[in-house]
Image (tube, rainbow, N blue to C red):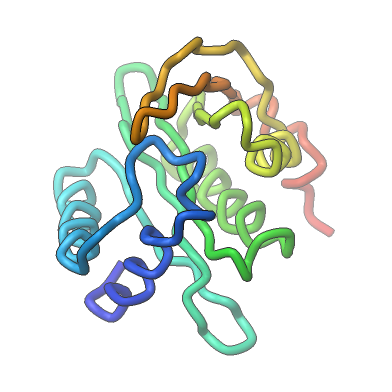
Length: 172
């Protein structure tokens, strides 16, 4: 993330359609984008995670972000997250960006496990995780309440040995 990303981040996180399955309300002010970039820099400084902007290769346009958070060296684990613009949906950007972070997590950071959580109504996000080899491990019932809307959450997990055996990581 950089100072150049504030406007795009605000547009992304203030879009009601993008945020409909998110675990927090949509943004109302540009200050929230500044706080998000600062938080991204802080987790990198503290070595507890990384959040990176994703850009379209053809023109460098911001299409979203992807993160690894809650690194736990003792358990060699982390949590994956991502958020992409509406015009990026269905084009493979989330799968590609998350795949690159997973490659880094398992090959460079030597993680054993990566976890992700998805609102049970968000079938497209669940498909992204399944394409990457994640296994749905359970449901957290009534786990989230945003703007009075109660929802369940699916928990997905991916182990290093599963990642290395998955066709998505094999060289073409």
